[in-house]
Length: 365
Figure 1: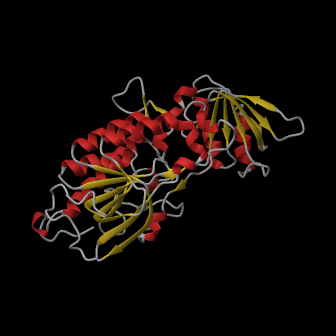
Figure 2: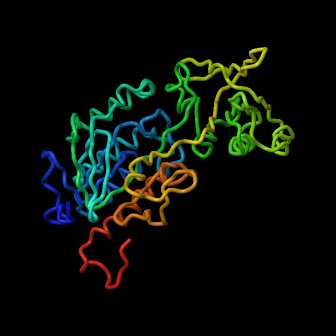
Figure 3: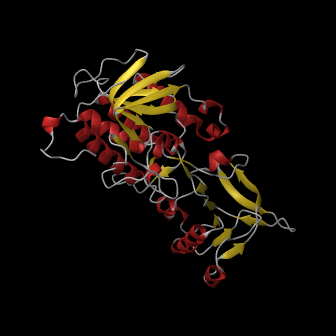
């Protein structure tokens, strides 16, 4: 399909929703904080915007965000998502619930195939039933469409806000523990661990750094390798841990003993079946960026598999931008995701300008 497959009136709300093919100025893949921030910005620029989301991202877990400006008592990530969806809808953003199964580009126009999401059958959903249910109920009020069969999207521009897949340990009740006693981000939740008994689970340098950094919040810190092979750091770093009073356990974990979302003990895989009392557990297993669509569209990735972007969220593919956790292995903050989403939207909006609206001699990105 040629570049003529776009809104009949650029800058005006598109009228093709409800047909078998949806034509939009911008398709935003991912409905977390980054995607919703982009949707608000672009919709306010009077672009036709469609947010596609499979309800399988971090923003529906049970964590409370306490370092986002303007919420002195904290706000659950799921509440930020609900508020963002209402705000985006107010300016005309449309929503489609489903999973993107295919993506391609032809003469500067992007094509996506969306199918029914299989998230309902996943065991991890058990820990966020209430959040998913409220999100679905709000979606219905906002006119969200649910893909029950293939839905095709044709977009003039794209923002990938697909996030990451976390590698939490799987144990009975694990999903209820996320955000309550099971964490992944010291910047987000370290303060809440002040004075608590903390175990860091991980075997590499990042886990060692985290264990040492936790000493700014509590003196009761241990580190557990969480695998049979033990730690993968130099002896010097193990000495740093010992010298700073951090307990070291080069063991795998056979059980996370928990109740109602609170982890109480870690059972180690050793002859004594040692049980470590804990209150908070920080797991360091590198999350996997959700970049399948990026790869299909020829987007450049870095050595860790995250999408490479510049300061305005441009990828190497003209008209395609990325924002949020999928772009960076560090600083997975809601505030950073919101900023990146807004930046990506501004860049996409400029891309969508007619030639006469751009500075003469401007270089397309």
